[in-house]
Amino acid sequence: MTTPSLSTAPWPATTRYGLAPAPGGLGLVQDLLNTISAGAPRQPDLLDELGSATEWAHDVAARWSTATGRPAPDVTLDPAGLRALRIFREELRYGIDARLHTTQESGPPERAAAPHATGATLRLDGNGSVHLDPAGTGADLLVSLVLAELFAAQLTDVGRRIKTCRNPRCQVAFYDRSRNNSGVWHSVRICGLPANLRAHRARRRQAD
Image: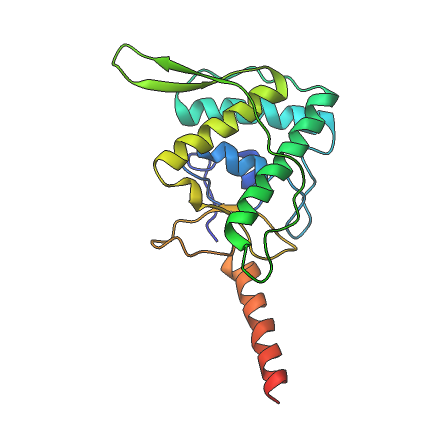
């Protein structure tokens, strides 16, 4: 497990779990996923209350601006927006879990909600480059930012490196930096070794 520094890991939710962040604006996607209650000792769910959610949203807007070099968006949450953001977080987690953990035997994990859609605009700059600009206000703007970053990451084939820990009691989101993108644990020491040890003991009991 890598302990982040302030210069490389400024994302508030991800930092709680001692993880290095995803590069650039993709850190926003990882940080939203890591607002969940996880870890030992258990960290609070940052989207549980409007106060903590608002503080987190303002913080990550500024962090996203630093990571991308773009102006910080003004994200103001209200109770309805917070509910929508929690639903979107579960949709995002469902999509990642379905991609990672679906097997022919088990099928995809149980779905939390219908897919989320939001607005964005395409913009041509003076150099002939096309940019995808998030749109909306409040929670819709934050969702648009997350989806725009995921879309850009898919184009460069790094979006698949955002994963959730295979440990069902953990599910912390991490950025897989392994060469062949084979990581399954947010921390081999915390989640991987205990799981492998339990599996080894189970095989021994079965053999005996």
